[in-house]
Length: 230
Image (tube, rainbow, N blue to C red; front, side):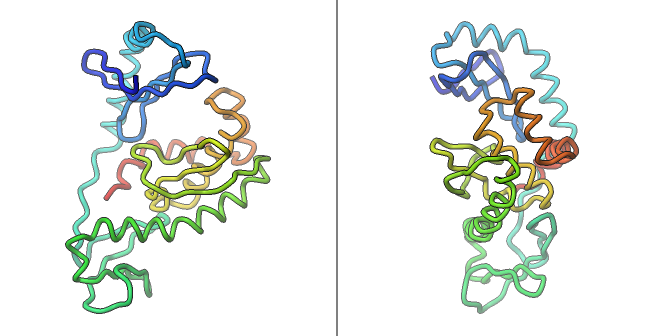
């Protein structure tokens, strides 16, 4: 079972043989994730959800209040697009060698590509984000004490990052829209998961060793992260 619905609450279910307890996470967009041990019975998960119902509704209400949905971007000249925490105005041009490029402080897109603007700009974010994130991973991995096997930038749905099997790190392409200090928190978060798979006190202690002010960065992401959408 990969999904669970309890009354009006819908969860993605992730099972792991390494887990010993059930945990609920309310992600950045208000999506609900239920992590459970491999053989956990459905009735046990349902009971856990009902016990945590008030907490879940409180978290969902907080997210609604803090982070209203971002308006959809329009691929027209003058629209602002974030990159590494800064906003760049889009300029549609009639000629250039690639669909999207950042040049002299302007994000330029071929006018003929504007009808399919979103996939073009997502590809641009992914291509620019790959080397940027690889450098940040390399700069923090020694501090954390791990050696990831690689970095992949792709669409991760509601997650900013993920630690895959074999030590590979995955980051959402939207990560490079965020300010660099916040991206570094996401990087360290996933690096520490190579040692500590769950959000235990030991996990957060390791994060704090690498980034002493991680709490402020984490809070900024919780409050502002939802507006970094396209």
